[in-house]
Structures are given as C-alpha cells and as structure tokens.
Length: 177
Ligand SMILES: C[S@@+](CC[C@H](N)C(=O)[O-])C[C@H]1O[C@@H](n2cnc3c(N)ncnc32)[C@H](O)[C@@H]1O
Image (cartoon, rainbow, N blue to C red; front, side, top):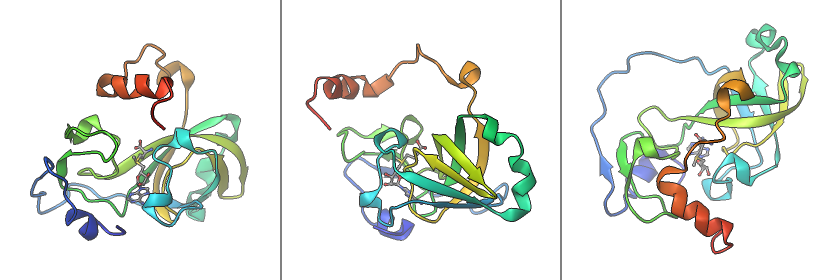
C-alpha cells in the first residue's frame, strides 16, 4: 500500500472509520524532508528502537539559523508528517497485536493528524543536514519540527506499558520478534 486511498480500502475486521471535518483548523509548514533507506512501508522499521540505520534530516535552508546550539544535545525529538497514511481510522487492528484498539492508544501512522515522533541520536550536523540514527519513516517523509530531548523532562523510568504489557513480556521471553 502506498497511498492513503489504498489503505482506506484495506480495513480489517473491527476497525472503525469516521467522517473527517470538511475543513482543517490550522496549517503547518513542512520545514524539510527526511531521507531514509526505505521506500516501501513493508521495509520500514516498526519503531525507531528496531533500527540503527543512518538517516539524514534535510532542513529547508531558510530555517538554518534555527539549528544554532542543537549540536550540543545527544538526542533530538523529531516530529514528522506521515503523508501516506489514512486519517479517518479511530479504531484499528494492528497486524501484529490482534484486538482492535483506539487510535490514541496506538503509535500507528494512521490518525486524524498523522504526526509521528522519534527520539533520534544526533551524530553530527553538516550545514542544514542532520545525520541521525533511530528513525522509522519512508524516504521523503515531510519534517514538521525538531526539539532537543531533555532527559529531566522526557524520561519516565516508572512508565507503564499499558495494553502492550503482555506483548512486552512475551518478547522478553524470546517468543516473539
Ligand atoms: C508505527 S509508525 C511509528 C511512528 C513514530 N515512531 C511514532 O511513534 O509516532 C512507523 C510505521 O509507519 C509507517 N510509515 C513510515 N513512513 C510513513 C509515511 N510517510 N506515511 C505513512 N506511513 C509511514 C511504516 O509502516 C512504519 O513502520
């Protein structure tokens, strides 16, 4: 599947789609593009933790001055726009997890505003190119924002795994990939 239309035609049992509002409430500026080794969704890592592949974030040169001081951080939060995802699925049935789940309890790219995030390791910045590891998106995915990752704010060692607890336990025992 390569387009939202393709995806819309491939609903799984238990999934629920809604009619989206006719108009959007705000606009975004894509501030760059993300270059990755993956051109098909099936090739993409399912999440940033499952790939260490080098990727490049190409910032639009007009925003270059905004990169000042970012290189002082080891990790950066990257927000990007999943431009090839459906937007109307409020209940989804993840291929690998069986039961239908609410979209806001999922990290699925298909959501009303298809915004994704990854916390990436920043290796170096060359001009307006950021060399990073830890992304899971298709080549050419639009970039929305960059923010420094701050362990004192963003790290929660006591966080729960929610409905994914069983999945995580299984994985730790080596029964799933
Ligand atoms: C499960 S999402 C997680 C995204 C992000 N790390 C997050 O947690 O918000 C990652 C998957 O989205 C899909 N994907 C990647 N780039 C996409 C794009 N530009 N449009 C639509 N789907 C995309 C791929 O199947 C990839 O494995």
